[in-house]
Length: 369
Image (cartoon, rainbow, N blue to C red; front, side, top):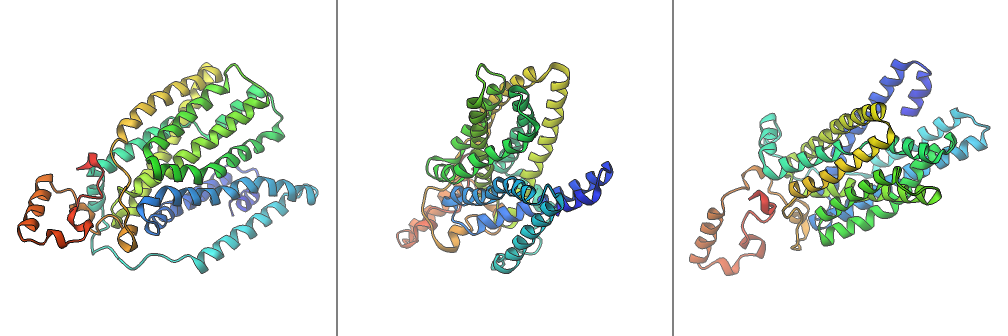
């Protein structure tokens, strides 16, 4: 739909800006609810795999799209109208599948007033949520954007303008091949190390752009590492968030994190563009590498704690790990000990299920207690 709007807008700058704004609004409206649906349909211990599978399927379209567009152009004597019509038909088919086969989770509705500005304020006051939002904003600030990376790579290798769209195809190929495996690794070894490893891959990307190597090897290495960065951070960061955000405000929490990232991307793009203009691409890219390396250290501190579950639960409790009224889950450790003591004194502790014996704090990260 955005492509059709661009075609209708022609060369009018204002109309083109309006079409892009509408397209990005649609992305903002759908992304947080979609990620919330993923978490509410998956046990917490499998969040990394679930987001990895989704990102793989999503990136298949981004990988195949330019190739299909080139094929359509070749078959229709460079008729761009045919490309836009084909894109519209594919998008309409996707919407039809969504309407017919995807079901919302409406079995457990939040209590009256659970979703409100006051609830959002209480959500932000939760230490793990606050740290995660800060980490997402910091990560966005040191990510300069795909367009800059591909322009720097093109300038370094002097590739023709016709090859520019295929640079994104190379990144997407690496991303779709690695998103699911890295999601599985995140579930097994921890999501924090995978996210930090992804940003270290981004440091290498920035460093290689004007490093000592060149040629085809540089192109392959940069595009592969850029795909590693996306595969290790995009879905895995949302998997981290899914274990922290209370169910009634799960979508709101995802939207808060993604809004922080988007605003940070804007700041980073403007800052990098100014640095490129004032000091040139070499200094700008090396400065971005240094800032990203420093950010990795800070991210490691912000994301410390246990943000994933090691115990195995099943059924509805595993799919909805945080209590429905998740804002009362931060009682003191002493309260938990007193409750456990009362159960033991009554002689009923041994007969309780294992999940209940652990008390209400089992889903909070250690640093949030």
